[in-house]
Image (cartoon, rainbow, N blue to C red; front, top):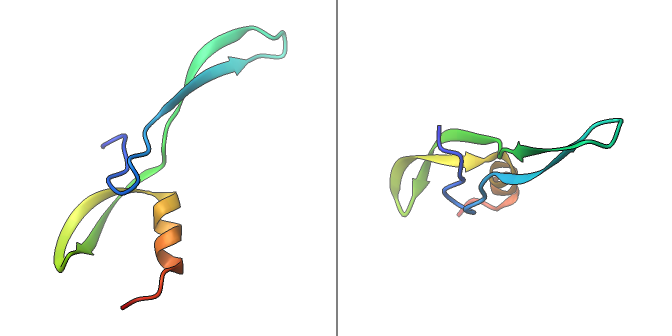
Length: 63
């Protein structure tokens, strides 16, 4: 599955995992990307969309 949102172009970020003893090891924050069939410009396409964009689309009024 794609690791990037087709709408907002969000992609994985990198940071540190910090244990109780304060040791830092690198980790990856991945985006929650889902496959959805959406109508874009009158054409139904399968796109990879992050859940943040899906929630925002529910708020938009339908034309």
